[in-house]
Image (cartoon, rainbow, N blue to C red; front, side):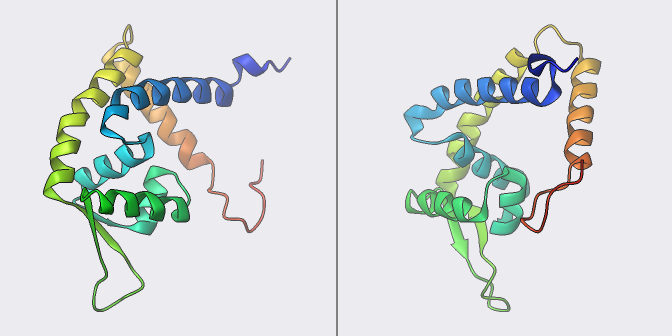
Length: 150
């Protein structure tokens, strides 16, 4: 019999919400949201990105991401440029201030992940990450052009 509290989506969401709540408390003094931190961390990893690519990786709507990036740009944590060859694309990069903030906050993210997986072996953590990536790839993004087949 189906039991909500034993379902994978419920358990994933519950863990994700808890992790996000704890991390949000830790970065609140920097006046950042978790989504803003994810933008900064992804730019640290990739050097630069388009808004579309960032929206996909950060898992937010592009309109929401555009506002987040605008706020980060006003705070001089990121820069936005449009390539001359394609003015429709926006390239986002970390500024030196954004890089410094990201480097200061990344250890908090690492510590939180360690806390979340404590008691699990390295192999279990690797298997969990692999399973989560597989689950993500198993589910196509909903593009508004129809329902996901289940």
